Length: 78
Image 1 (tube, rainbow, N blue to C red):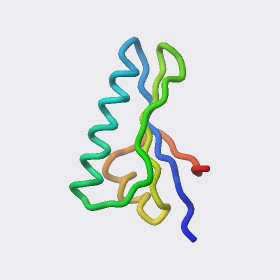
Image 2 (cartoon, rainbow, N blue to C red):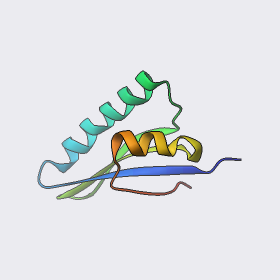
Image 3 (spheres, rainbow, N blue to C red):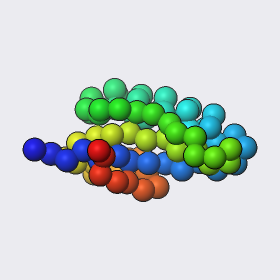
């Protein structure tokens, strides 16, 4: 069974939450256009100056997402 990975983009500054939410729109567009599977796309507010956008994908698809979208980091999804 394939592991699920969470690819993460960090955004900082007073507009970080809006930027992260907007990035999620582009993540979904990319997945739909490329016909790639994903489990979840979302954003998280970590502080008023730091937000993240993320997508959870199968490990087998990680390289396609990573090479095209350049996430800042990744982790094994729960």
